[in-house]
Image (cartoon, rainbow over all chains, first blue to last red; front, side, top):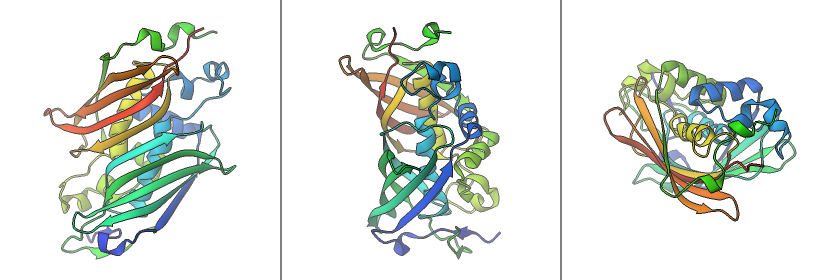
Length: 152
Length: 145
């Protein structure tokens, strides 16, 4: 099978950006709770959540953080990338039916180490920032038979 | 319903050095459901034919999936239900393959009782004892009435 891979480290420049946006559904929250086993009441129990300052269920912070991997793995650098390290800070709660846009910007390129540094900002539909972060990713290395092509 | 009895530990019930554990075998279903939720269909995670030709030789789990097992401990055991995640950082050290069994550990590192915030250290180890990631972060434990 001919492998399509994302951008190699030589093809990435400081300032390159990529975005992913998604409306968060109840299904996403329940699947995330099932996969991770994180059945904290705040994301899964309406009656409990009503009694908190949030007044409704709040998405797992790690679910919002997980959308970073979408950009790394699908867009920038894209197919074949891996995340080496990542930091996130949650600044506001995310609720069911919120639409979250993650913007990722390349802040440094290290060709010798085959790594790129990135910063991320997640905003919701009203423009408010819900999460900020940064990290280091390893772009794909071309395989012998790979056909370099960015999949979007 | 007051739910007070199923709330996790308040900050006054937690000490530095307290630990909690969770272990799970990472299934193909987990990886594919995680891909579906995040939209990350990187072939490194969902394409065995591609993965065979890479350094890793097989499909690997999303790093973010493994680190989310730490969120499980924080949200269900220590501090437990009602906990709010503030921030975290993670370094991935080794790949996690489908069918690997991962044990996550959370240890309380620092308490700020005035601000109701605590810092934790966490790590994940596979069935061979290899550390696959290290993490640290901050959470707000539930407040009890």
